[in-house]
Image 1 (cartoon, rainbow, N blue to C red):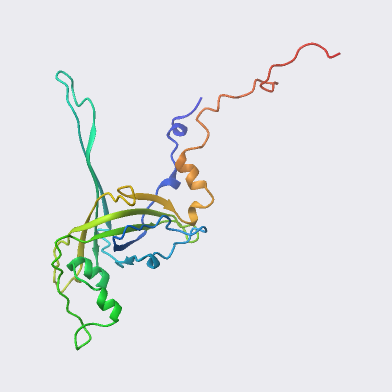
Image 2 (cartoon, rainbow, N blue to C red):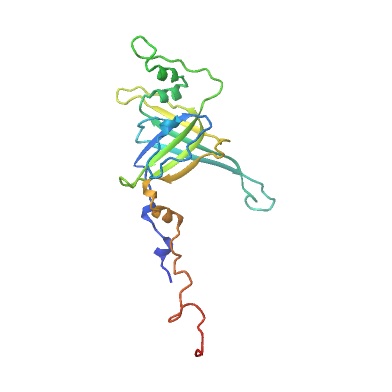
Length: 248
């Protein structure tokens, strides 16, 4: 016999939250991080691979990941519903409101070349500031985006991760000027499949909190089946046939 509670298998340890979050972006170049952490679970230095952070972003909106899927299929005369479902399109969208005026973020928002300013280490105006012109590109620039959440106690962090290999910023929303709010940028990206990455996106859970394997075991559901394994021994036996008769 088993119980309703055991069949349900509630696991509070499998409730994850993004208590903090970061978004890293780099221009698309066909290279992607295959690992986010080192062997000890610590985060790798993705800056060395060309990624840059957008810094802190709007708390009330967080980071929005939308997974789109459209299906179609043939219908039979006299049959209710479709006879087969075929995926006609699939996509992923990301939205986040950046608060900090970083050069890398401004370059994305305004489609402007900030690389020369970074390399020069100074602005292009006499007063030390800078003025840039928007690019007149026929093709929208593409980016690789990594989103990393933070959960868990210190030393036992778990990072929910999404790697989106190819994204295009399709909308920046409105830039609002107000004496009660800072100037922020609503970034909206749409993802497309990358031939080099061979997938629309990657996702996972990493960090020092995964090292002992307990969280993975809970996620895999490898605990004993409810009601036993079906291999219980008969009382007084070993599970094997008992020999009868006396020796010798």
